[in-house]
Length: 461
Ligand SMILES: Cc1cc2nc3c(=O)[nH]c(=O)nc-3n(C[C@H](O)[C@H](O)[C@H](O)COP(=O)(O)OP(=O)(O)OC[C@H]3O[C@@H](n4cnc5c(N)ncnc54)[C@H](O)[C@@H]3O)c2cc1C
Image (cartoon, rainbow, N blue to C red; front, top):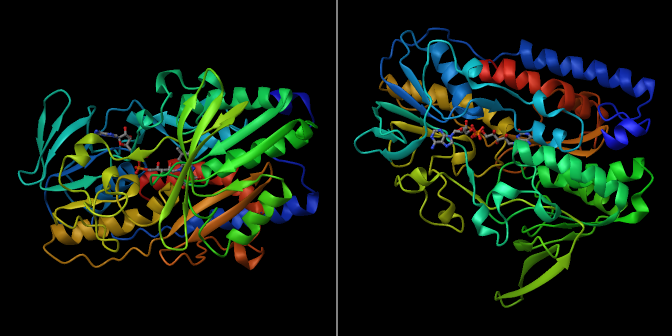
């Protein structure tokens, strides 16, 4: 690791005093105990309901739900359809792109993640007929189901950004950490950018997208790396967001705004990326301003850059958009998010289909932290429906987004549908969680990944 290897700076630990370290380590231990000891799962083999369940997508949502169903049902009949060889812990991509994790630290073989006893069809779904209860795979296999867990995540619509070829991502120093390869390339580019200097542009996208915190994290980590390496004055940082505000959870927003100001990172609101001229290193933006009479003023402009980090627009896989299960109204209708009841997570159109995670239109953040809370609700409700009862459990919209603000600190944002702060870890007992904390960095770097692979994917937390 460039700066990391050449300087005394420690990417995993930051420079932290002994007292802060001990306090942080004690709190992280508490959190770990709470997470593991507080396993909310009860009801092992508690339901005799019998039916054929198909799970489309073996990511964070699908695998965790299948694992939990395997435990609750006495005679589970579960088929998971997923084409991937590898199961990625995607929150680790940001840490690869900042040199904290090595690329091979963030995945396991999918075969090791499929719950024992579940059948795995290693293929992609290309069509879903919800009336006939049949899915078709890319190899032409037709698979019927009684109940469907629809969790295929989302896809990146790269072609909606002019000039970007996803196969040649990184060309013209235009990077995206939202894929494993992209994260690896980004780290190489950040090291050069921090060394050579220049104008850095960082942006999100206008569709709903997963982990809205990630574009902010990579901005702030790069800025901190430059300071640690003594080159900050040679770089400029500019953050563009398609949203009307930087962050919409009032408990955390003031501190986040302060951090951007302290670090001299100007924030440009209501501005979306339209295209990139990778040869000329120019990024094309569109700004939409609402005037007092409600009309929108749209202006296009271009900015030069030396280093660009951007997000592609996102939506559901094609077969979901064609399935008739998506919401058809609202500004995000084109993206095809599966229309579910925001409390029960059951499809509004088909009571034998449950959907959550990134593919759903749940009005909360698309994060695996949210999925951790959605899984027990989704599974309990599915089992109720299988037993001929009404779904009883209600999801409150809990989501978390650990915004890494520098090497050593994280603003641990936890909230629900009402956008009120909602802590699930016992940290406020010891810390002011409206501010970035070292203990949250320890959790982010050391605790959340094992909690994901060993707890969540096993249906335990
Ligand atoms: C850069 C980055 C940083 C992030 N940081 C955080 C963070 O700090 N904290 C946090 O909580 N979350 C974070 N997330 C978000 C989190 O990783 C996702 O919200 C979560 O993985 C979504 O889970 P999912 O199961 O819905 O989708 P995924 O985990 O993406 O899984 C979808 C699965 O469906 C399969 N699939 C796709 N299409 C088909 C098809 N047609 N047929 C069959 N299978 C299909 C895929 O192969 C995949 O296995 C981050 C994500 C990224 C990219």
